[in-house]
Length: 410
Image 1 (cartoon, rainbow, N blue to C red):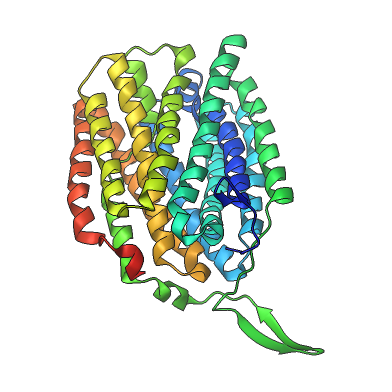
Image 2 (cartoon, rainbow, N blue to C red):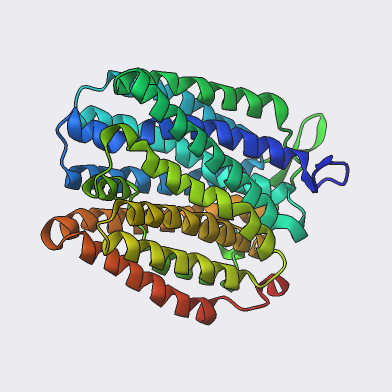
């Protein structure tokens, strides 16, 4: 972190700006995402299995592209440029949803939308890691997550109001979602300054009239710079995220429990509210106690959420389960990205996040692919019970893979 960086309430000013950018882009995204399962089912005739498989595949695309955006951000050592492409692309895609006339059309637009999301993630997390003071990484990632999910909560409430006002006009809301996405792009471009970097793998080549020219070039040995502690985090993330299928199934569970169509966005509101409430406090706490203890709290949130949604038909218990599912996201994602920042050097950080997100993408694709079949053939009880069991098993692997003093070993 630059010693001249202005601090606001104990954290660097650029962290606050990036968090506000995340708030706006999530506000835009949730206006589309919270309505997409029922839009596809009620207006386009898609089945739950189709929606789930599309969900899993497009999320897989979003996660896989994060490897390339992370490596690019490392090679050129310019996080903001790559991040700007992602946010700009996200804004341009939003109006296309209003034109969709078939499931196939929605599929391709969602692929484009998730590509834009994938371009954003690795450089964003790497940039936060570059700016954040080492002693406050958990708090910085927690703040970014909290404001992002605050945007999702605001977007959900706005969606509920607009759905009632427009008599459930899905396409109107898809057009309105374009506005906050554009604002997020402009705020990033004009208000965030890229910190100075030095890429260990840049070639220094003489050129006429100049002493040295720095030539960015990809090197496979970049991957060899990732240490064993980092790979243990990746293994643990892989095991746990097999329990994490697409959030569309939370919406389906709410509808099955009696949630009315106008209030369907409440599912994503509660999901994001759970993230909002825990992200900053537990991120801050993870800077002061062993991170693995906070990670276990997140895994237990997941177990409780799965049991409540899987074994209760009471709508209120199901919605509490949705809230806890969000709480586990706010906890586990923050701790895992903080651990990755702890265990990787600045010049390789984008690549490290890219690999992390790609592994998560594979898990979510696999789990979402089979989740629909399990639900259709065995019922939601079996699906959510499997999720709970994987969460419990993951708790044991925390102590096998994550040392108590991992930050000191980095």
